[in-house]
Amino acid sequence: MLSIIQAAGWPIWPLLLCSVLSLAIIIERAVNLQGNKIVPSDLLDDVLEQIQTRSLSVNEIENLKSQSFLGQLIVEGLALQNGPHELHFERTLAFQLESKGKVIAAHLEKHLSTLATLASAAPLLGLLGTVIGMIDIFASQSSAPGQPGDLGLGISMALYNTAVGLAVAIPSLIAWRSFRAKVDGFVVQLEVASERLLLARLQLEAAHLDPTPNPNPRQGVGQAEKNFK
Figure: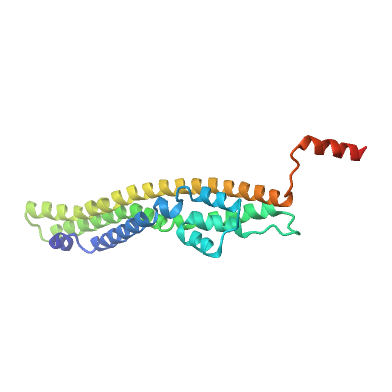
């Protein structure tokens, strides 16, 4: 293996660096892009059920923040209080949830652009190494002609750069496509959770504003019409 690296020349060293970086990113993203760390199942349902009867404690809020990205989104949605002078509560809450969702999406996409760049650059670096190797081989042959076998061996060694470049690019591209699909799925789930949380907060605030709702809404309408007359 060492002899192949030495024969391939200096252009193979950037390819080896790309392979190390690509492997590190793939391992890091595979560990962190897990469903239980992003959108745990039943977490939102449990929280929405709890806030119907009581407020969350400080420890529960801290646990939500550290548990998952969905927990951070839930805490952001519960943090805004509808004060007596808040005229645009719904709009403000929606803006906060949208802003937090963008921050979470950026965290989910971390290093993916780098992985895509490595997948695109690796075959080009391999081709560059092969071209440089071929130039060196033919230059040496023109100055001091050797055996045809030596020429074939030199060409095969130069082609190792292309082979290594493809060996780095193919797994990197597959991993990038897989992670990209997972991130897109998580973003959709977070958007749905954000909408559900917004609706639940608006319903909860409406219930607090009207603690004794009229069991017969038509009676209220009739009384209003009578007062108007």
